[in-house]
Amino acid sequence: MSSLPLPREPDSQPVRLVFLFTGVGLALALGSFEGAGVQAIFPYIGGGLATSSYRALWTLTYFVVHWSLGITLMPWSTHRFGRRRVFRKAVWLAAAGSLAGAFTHNLWVMLVSRAMEGLGAGLLVPLSQSLFLAATPSRRHGLVTVFWSNAMLLPFFVGPAVGGWLATTVGFHMIFGLTMPLWFVALWLGGRGIHETEVVPASKTPPFDFLGFALLYAGLMALQVVLDQGEQHGWWYSPFIRDASLMAAVCLYLFGWYEARARHPLLQFHYLRRRNYLLGLLLLSLGWALFMGWASILPLWAEEDLGYNGLWGGILLLPVGLGALPLSAALDHLRGLFGLRRLASLSFLLLGGAYGTLSVHPASALPDLFWPLVVLGLGVGILFVPLTMIIMSEIPVAAVPAAATTANFIRVFSANIGVTILAVYWSRDSARASNALAGELSRYGHAATTPLDVLQGFLSVEAHTVSLDNLLRFSMWVCLAGAFIAWFFLIPPRALIKASAHSFVEETENESI
Image (cartoon, rainbow, N blue to C red; front, top):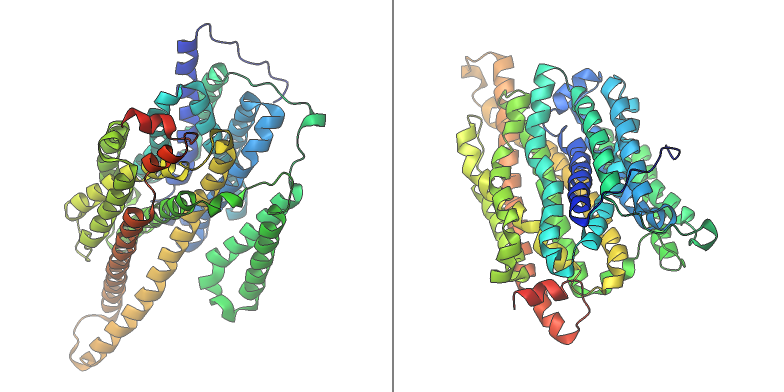
């Protein structure tokens, strides 16, 4: 790959920007699609890989954990190899993973291919953000942040429907085959648009934090084993889960201890001492984790309990995009009218309202869920831009790449926590509800005329739905708490500007004063 000639430079700056935003934006969107495309088809993946729907969920969680790990590699790799070469290698890695995923019928090979896709997609998240910001004047950074967040979010709205359609027509493997030619289009366009930075010689490049990366990788993989297999093994009643939990705790503790003392750390957690950075990142991770969890279990519920196929399970999430995309596109104007803190609070109020009004039952149809999901999209559409800018509001401009890398890593990995917690709660509460319903019905067993298998199926669907409804109410209260924190504890960036004129949002906030 390194022997390929560099793309010819475009002749003018406007042309270069078109190539940059089209090519790199497409690559960023493809990375998100690799994760979103499987969210509505876990039963199909389980059948194609000769495993269960529960294990098929690993194809998402292992992608996300490597997606977060790929983010940590960006600062050092671009410093050592240059932005264009890192972009090309990230695209090649993701494309190679897609190629392997398109042909395998083995779960473990699929997980390796998902790891390759995740690492490539993870590199592209902070790399694309830094490329877009570096190529545009500071007065356009708010608009660029809107474009970057939309390129990353759009596949999560349409990807499940596309993945469901492919799974029900030509097979789920075509999800990976579809991305192959698009990766090469992104490679060509992005290579022409990226202005290569000066490559620092190896002798002058800070050493890569191999020990930190090894500790982080071991800790996250052990934690992922606990999250993915804990329910199956009975959690900490199992010696295997206890050992994996101990390994995760030890490795992650040693990673945090070592990073605080390393000269060139992989992640810089000292930014968490800043109030807006800590609270803004907490809120962004919370909103993102809840959304990713619901985007995974709602289609699964619709397919397993309502009888939807993969296509209609994916279409279930389209109203979220209908609410999110128009509003997120207007955020560059709205932040000037309302302010970032108010928008962050409004986002969680909308999310809480959506979870509070989204009532499910065994006879639910798409029209019953449409408007609550549109409101959910409105909340998700507002979520990213104001909180991203609040997170960076106390960060000096020169420190933005390092701070953004740490924030993106934590935010992306939070999706795994959300998916796992919601799935485990749903499974456990469904079992509790099923036992309670069975106990009630047992009192009338002598008078029952319904066949036993039909009755058991009815109990299962009813228990799953009751559990899901309880989980929606819990999510509502969590989001209302998030709105309270955003309103009363976040510091408006305009107030910070008056105290210090060197923050990331200085110019963009000054535009709207």
